[in-house]
Image (cartoon, rainbow, N blue to C red):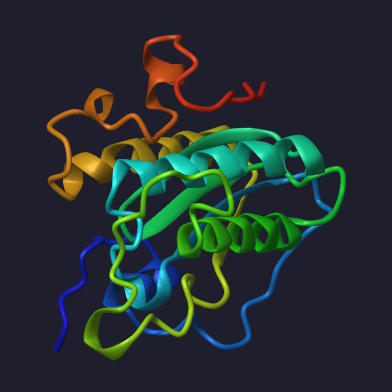
Length: 197
């Protein structure tokens, strides 16, 4: 039996940590003005974002989509095989449309970096074991509505601790692909963070 790698984080994240598909019948609650804690994963939780360049691409595309759809990015962390976001609902579309755009753009850039401004091949497992993965991203995503300050801080702390918990950094300051520097150092980091009251 596989071990859970993420502790007591609720049923949806336990499914992600075990590598199973998202539970059937997930409901999305939009239009209430809540923040959304979102988790989306690479296909079969492969470490397709294991390079700094790949994680940089996610941050760049997230920034572009944020500007287009006008959502507030409260916090984030990009890990080697998944991404966590804490965001508002966008003015144009829903969190689902935001994720669709980010996923599509990153997967296109990762699969064809020269066409989308890259000069070197991104190191990814495409072509290993007989061919590329069927998809870059796992279908669907986990969405948890956040409507209290306490829950917001819990989710931010969880995201910022994730690289340390996973042994990727000794301290959150050592992992630039998160919003930690905005909250604890007052520095902008790789992408603009929108402070929420």
